[in-house]
Length: 369
Ligand code: SF4
Picture 1 (tube, rainbow, N blue to C red):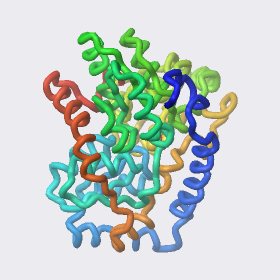
Picture 2 (picture 1 turned 180 degrees about the horizontal axis):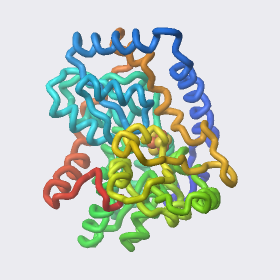
Picture 3 (picture 1 turned 90 degrees about the vertical axis):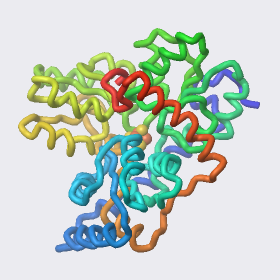
């Protein structure tokens, strides 16, 4: 039995090197996708993918953090660029019988949970997420079992099996109103897996929660001191921060929000420059929304320093045109979710969507987010 006092990852029986090892493996896999294209290769791959999508009655949905060429291709072929839940919902409404999800595994699983009758493919089904890795279902279930009087609220960045163990699934956009709603009903809340998002929701809502100690390897890297120094050089820049970032980074934000809310902020605010603390794949949509504005990557290293391999999500970077063409050709990297787990995971997902509908709240949200 796991001790109920889990305050840091060190308290979990997860091999400490596991995530670091997997980051390294992902970076190697991503390097194959990001190797410069030979002359004519990109055009040939794009044209091959377009034909395969048509032939297979497939639609491409890409997350905001994927490479610009994938986002562009999704838009050019009638697909969508969005956050994870919108990707799954779009797939549900679209007549295509195959959904090709460019993103990370939990996004493919969410698409499958909501669209069981459709085939779900990914460019690389091994692309994962540190929040998912740091919340293994067996240990998490024991932790929940040790706190039977708590309502279990999990972030969308979790495996289908963890969702199946939860009472509620939330996105960053809807986390705050759901937590407030549950607290009003007198519920005690167990939150997982992102400790920073959990701490942020707790500080805004004033609701005390039992918080699992996972984190995002990308957002964890943003450094408040270096961001303040950059802000000193660009005093009129607005600071946009995703709530998966540490509290001291959130404190200096002008806007704290989900990916969708941060993209919205670049047109809502009058600022001409933005310091952006989230995965830089988001710049594709930000530049599209506000082509005359300037976007600066928030620093991750020492003062003023930024490290490309820290700021890029290693698993998002595993998605490329080369493996997208391959998955369409071979049908490999199909996402399956065992039916008992799928049905259980659908319940807390559906609960969130019903809540959003009833209270007319966007899951993309500007609120928490
Ligand atoms: S950016 Fe962070 S939260 Fe998003 S997929 Fe990568 S590791 Fe997970």
